[in-house]
Image (tube, rainbow over all chains, first blue to last red; front, side, top):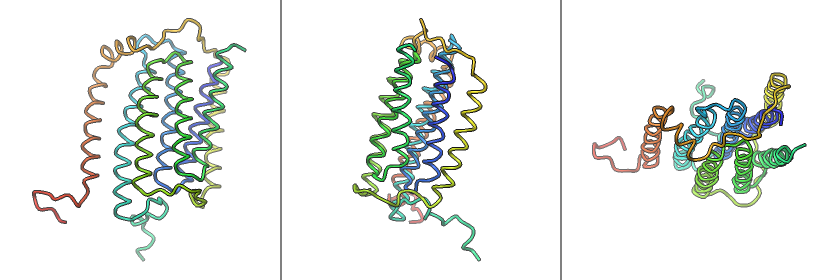
Length: 105
Length: 175
């Protein structure tokens, strides 16, 4: 199998995740886009691990670490999302603009 | 074309198709369920690439925990179950353009850079639980410990955040 097959798959999945993050309004759907991007990176890491046949298994170990960090990230992010829901009553990210500057004047 | 290549192409098709459905479907809960399909296809690809332990961790953590967390969050934010036509922002078209540019740039880069490189999957060193455990607890033990502290910090942070300002604080908070 050519090495660029899994790398191209990872690129496509990453781009789909980028679209999800940019285009979705619901904060939980944005987080799903982030998960897609993290998975694309993992596919890259595992593919290069299989290619280099590293004795330290750097790629697979870093993929495991990425999964752990993704789990920590999703736990914290969902806590924040639930807090936003409690204070605003919705989680539409394009309506959360209290931090925007343009309404000041 | 070998059997591994055919299975890889099928899994790739499943992963890309379900990922597209994750970011385009109008049902909130369906998006989470399509994410399960994407993540499972990725786990199958890990298995093909001889990363056995990573594949099972992917199933356990992502499919088992992360998606369940997402579904819980959807439930707690009173997500409607019917189709929602307004799930995509008005900037969907520029977002799609940017995503296509990202895909084009990354894709051409990796294809141009690794065009002639062959990934030899015959007789690989399978990353089984034993092999992975050996490497993590010999070469990678310090990052592993740092990660455990990170997880603890995330846990404490999530608890503090979800207690919110309604929790009574002993030091007489501003609430």
